[in-house]
Length: 123
Length: 107
Image (tube, rainbow over all chains, first blue to last red; front, side, top):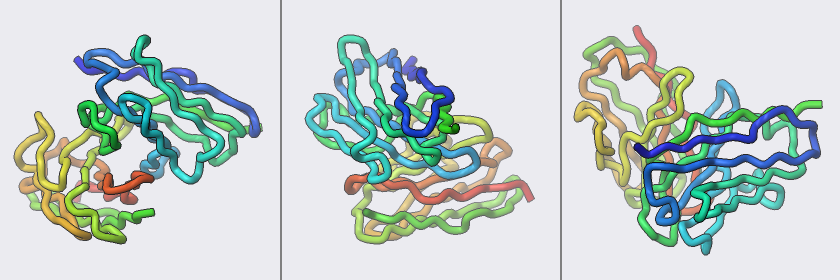
């Protein structure tokens, strides 16, 4: 069974950093692009960042560009999101999601989602 | 950035009704559209990709159509488990963008 489990969320002060992790299982992780998507409680979905299977393509939403860094460790079947200079408006539930494109150098959509990890930015 | 505009933002319907949700893109995106369903307190679930292709395991009462700038998600006969929020998403270009969502409520 394909499974994605996020961790690393929590309460953090504005301006501080946090690193989210996503543990993948049930599929060949290093064959697929991966995404982070967030959702403010009661609001819609916002794509945050995506990374191709090889790491050659990385893309970010304008709202996080320069502050967040997506990375992956294929040996550990893990995806990460390093979040620096956090703002109150970064408060959200952060989902890790798998892209269905097999060894493609682009980003498509999300076919499998984790349950999410909550990030709260507050003083 | 490509803007995705969904309509309506919410609708009330009864079990057995036919429901149609529309998503309009701010520029032509061929058929690079996916649709998702999000139940209360749940993670989103993929329903349709490439505008009209049903994800494996999704009931056939769901269908998608469209190309260019206008897309629709149709539920042919609404079931109790279909009351949820539905989102479209474009993957023609980065940044990937979602529509604002359509809440389908019980009448």
